[in-house]
Amino acid sequence: MNVGWAVWLLLIFCIRWGAAQESPPVLHLVYTANLNGALDDCRCGGEVVGGVTRILALVDSLRRKYPHFLLVDAGDFLSSYRFPAVHRAMLKLLTKARYQALNVGDQEFVEGTDFLVSAAEGRGLPLVAANLHWQTSPPAGIPPYRVWKSGGLRVAVLGVVATEAFDFIHPRDIRVNDIARTINRWYREITSATDLQILLFHGTPLQAEALIKATPWVDVVVVGHNQQRYARQVGNALMVETGTDGEYVGHVKIWATGNRWRMENEFIPITRSLPVDPEARSWVEAFYHSQTDR
Image 1 (spheres, rainbow, N blue to C red):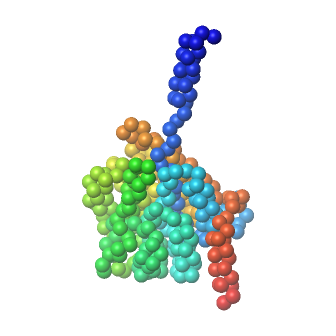
Image 2 (image 1 turned 120 degrees about the horizontal axis):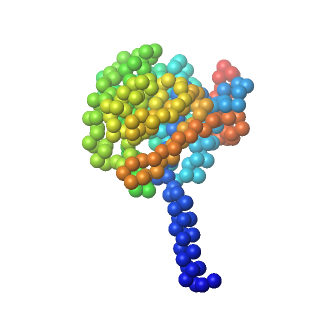
Image 3 (image 1 turned 90 degrees about the vertical axis):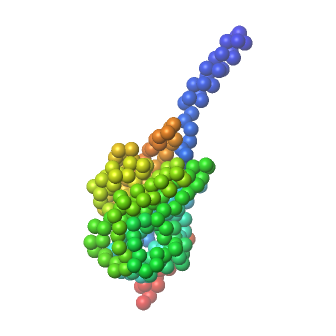
């Protein structure tokens, strides 16, 4: 074969091969919501069983598989009924998961404000709460937003909760401020210092859609409180929620395409065929035994 033709064909192949090889995502956003204190699987008859013991194993495998991994929760990781022992066990599991941000929802106040503050300051859980006004001095461990950096990408994760979410649990020592006004207060500071903006919103989908219209600079909205599962585009933002009791974990792959983001969402079912985290399961089994031995 003529050497010139061989070089030309090789060049064409390389160009086509290079075009076919899509660049990897700049971020793998993994998210949960509405865990409701579900330490272990539901022990029910269905294939989708949920529970944090299996979520921990999944999260660990995803974290090892993907670089630029960000784990967040939109709130209601505690249940809506007082059960301090269960909730202490839940906080231990959440600490093991190594979240980058956990939004404060209404159910996080089920054991009182002091319990929540101790979770942030005692366990070092990365809580966020932008529109909660504390009647006493605000806890140092609960900032309005957190910034995560990886591979040159800077991501802001902001947390808010709607007033209407507090229809069952009524904490006396906080006030819920207007969400849109609060978020836009941080607009310049956040957008000037970060590339991608993620909002953890605790309220209804309709409220989330209205909020997206009022804050068009937000890129992703992870919703909690409704126990629903959906993913849809609202304006320029992707809006998602994962369902209830840890039955699904959300995973958004995010690519940079010029001055825009391209996103693909998937829901990963937490089925009985998935492995459990052995250490977490041993903790939960010990907890169950401690309760039955009483």
